[in-house]
Length: 140
Image 1 (cartoon, rainbow, N blue to C red):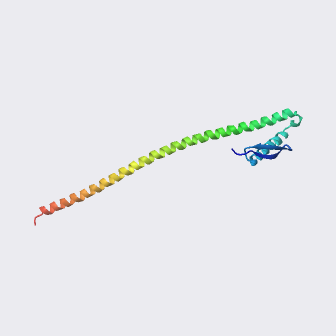
Image 2: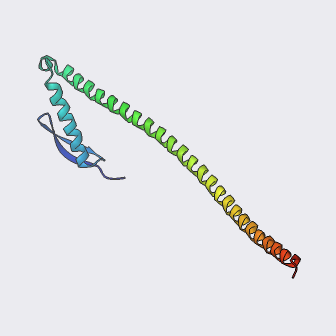
């Protein structure tokens, strides 16, 4: 298991030490997200008149809202991906089916071409025999 990373981050003007198994860059991104969310809700009308408890709840509600929206989008994308995978499987199956039909048709064509060649040889033989018979019947 990888070791924990520790990094200092600035959140709402205060320095905190964050630690986790994620990279320092990731921990900084989390802090940046939180700072942006805090800044966003601080600009709401009446925010500063709320108690610190209500301010914290408002921040949590906004963060949870972002989470559920992102989760819904991820679920939709996952569902879409699953559907695309199913369509791809069906297309691949159809392609294999058509390839088998093509190979069968190619074998059949080769067989028919061979048969046609045999018939052409037989025609030449029969024409030669007919010509020979005609020549034998002609008076000399």
